[in-house]
Length: 113
Length: 112
Image (cartoon, rainbow over the protein chains, first blue to last red):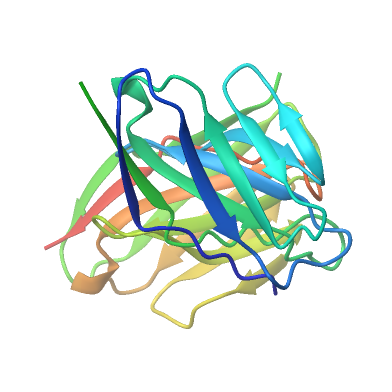
């Protein structure tokens, strides 16, 4: 079971780049790293997933060092609407396919003007 | 396209009453299904997950149970609700390992 550790909270201002780091020291060889975003009273929403090095999509980048024991979600030029809780998930395979999807405590990002 | 339906959106139930929350998925087959509970200001607690019909795994021993009577239907139940069962319940599905998870709109349950 690959447990994740994230900062409880982070503060930023509009227009800044935000980097949220997640530690997952026990990540297994075949595990991917996935990040979700959650707004109050809504279910989490997929942001990005990666296995190694760097992955970029229209909303974020994910940086994964060679040892894969941590990962960093990078949000470029955040706005007020990026205020949310961000979760990092890794591995936790299920027999028969799929992942168990165990969420940690997440990181509460607060963006101010 | 795939969609997930969860209902009701809100529910107020007295202590000791039964509970049944239903979740259905459309547009896919053999999904992995999940039930979560989120207390106010807290993270998501995985309650149950299922990789197939009739296959239920429980994460936390509690006053709740889950069933999967059909491939794309996942039901969360309780025979007698407790005050501590209050929270935001979310259903989710994935298509397989390392695939994106999709969540329902959630049910806000208040036990009074």
